[in-house]
Length: 364
Ligand code: SF4
Ligand code: FES
Picture (spheres, rainbow, N blue to C red):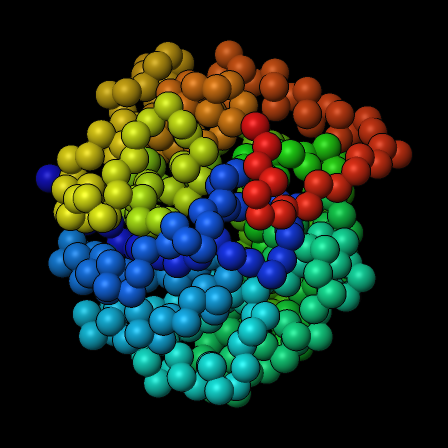
């Protein structure tokens, strides 16, 4: 029996006030004119609840740029779903926050890019650090649990202690320390962002020390830097196993980055019910389970542990989403990762130009 998806990532818009070097949205952003409307979203939310989804994460881009966000949250709560807002915090006034809470918002996750305005601007090319501090205060003032997220890389790993201080002082109850994953836009800036082994080891020590110190007050989570692992992560808990994403234009994916895999057809919620999309659509079936696997995964004892790693990473690095994730030491493509890691450990004085995310600036 196919298990029900646990979470729906509702990417309600790709519009965003930030221009992050590691943007996790697909290379080709959906324009505002392509976005599906309120009626489609509320139907998708109802269908998700019927399918067994228990959590909806409203994300983007910046979901606050959707004027109907409160209506969508209200629909999710009416279906007894847990609702979470994933936001840059820009545009979150007290009035807006209160309206979202009144609609039934359960929690908010705020991202920051560094511990100072200068550090943030270097990553996101936007001068709005003070607005993020205000957003954190607003979130806690309206009584929402504040979760925070920081993407870690070569430019900010040395500041981890200070970053954790900022999140603690802003009232975070949970803090995701997410080492950059190098697909999508981040791959474009990999040389700039990939840290050295030494930098990572020092940061990991900080993480363990602060996790122990903050136990019971702030929950710290460390998302592994997979280029430095022997085996890949079980990305998304396995393809189409636990969650699904609906993009701003209504196309559904097993993960938010999968839109970049142009060798697979993905279905749209405007043409198919979510139940069919989840259970039967070719895009969701493509890499589900283990039957699709090539060697060395096919005969590997870890195939039910990591599911062959990340399909988006395999596609981004080899052009074939069905290959073993090159992070894996058994992958015939592992040299692609090794070479990048070698470069990061040799080139301490290199300074590649940052390529900021701008709408319309797709790169293949
Ligand atoms: Fe995982 Fe495949 Fe590597 Fe085995 S060969 S560890 S299943 S990615
Ligand atoms: Fe898409 Fe890993 S990011 S499967």
